[in-house]
Image 1 (tube, helix red, strand yellow):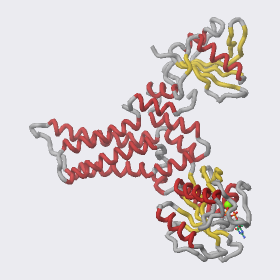
Image 2: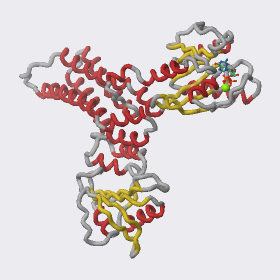
Image 3: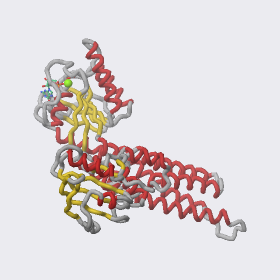
Length: 452
Ligand SMILES: Nc1nc2c(ncn2[C@@H]2O[C@H](COP(=O)(O)OP(=O)(O)OP(=O)(O)O)[C@@H](O)[C@H]2O)c(=O)[nH]1
Ligand SMILES: [Mg+2]
């Protein structure tokens, strides 16, 4: 029989109220062991009652009973709104376990909700992301997944493919060839349409990830060009040490900033030059290069008041070769001509700024933000994928359909097209959680927080 699980639903520590949640077939009978008899727990109504610890009162709490299936998990659920002391909460958990409940594993409430058809896998992940969202953009993204918009998009693709597959399969069964054959163009245009939809969705992945995890932005350049000044100007306080002397920053300095609701993780790095003064500076430079490799976006800072060194030219070539998105930030316009560009640049964008006066910084912020509001997103009504598992499944489905299209060109035969479409459908079902194996589900849900 299914166990009855229990966990706190609010964070540990002292608070005005804390919530404990019980879910499973024994929920009501376990509750009754802690209260006076004859209390009427009407469905979905808060009841003010005393929770007893033996003969003593543990707490006066608001208790709500949600009979199955109309509850978060789809099972019988009891929620306790307690006074927020750590003692009350801890003791209640003990008493509930003594009365027959078992502590819930991470994500087990959501897992049960998923098993009971209360939400699909994408919605469950959306929920997990929603709780951990630290800024508005991540919050909006999680909501789009939670409210089923992503599932809806994928379900459309799934239905279209299922229908096509059915049309193919009846013809495979039709040994007497009584049915009108399917035109190749019909199959290919149906497949192409779904490929395009999947591709659009896959394209949202990098941006989806930036939004959820933050855009990793490395500030690189030669010593003394103003990298630390730029970090400070963007975060709005003196996070990194700024000094006249070259080689001030040795270690990488990381700071997160919220730009219009989007999380940006800025890393200030040691300036790159040919002759490092000592091993610490050398190590610093190595770290700069590593930060640059890991970054989603590079801010390449150059000092407009002087010509570029060969080392800077080299660094620039390195960035370009890595094919990283880069913004060339030309600093110190208060002391030099804005408009001059010291580099042969294929850079997407060049922005002139003065960290001293703040000139140009708003424009730079806009340029940074444009990486997370790429045009493909608008077409997707804000629906995007943000985790690797989702991305891989979408890509898998897309590749299968593309293989079917290739075979169609060689007229390989209905059976082979059908096989690829089946594989694409399997990838999509896996994504939505229709037939995901238990071990995979275990991993996904174990990433949830306790009590969810
Ligand atoms: N006039 C002017 N000076 C600036 C500007 N930005 C930075 N500086 C000055 O340039 C010098 C170097 O600035 P930092 O921000 O420490 O430069 P950095 O690139 O971090 O240098 P390292 O850490 O040594 O690699 C300091 O004296 C700053 O005050 C600017 O926009 N205008
Ligand atoms: Mg510095």
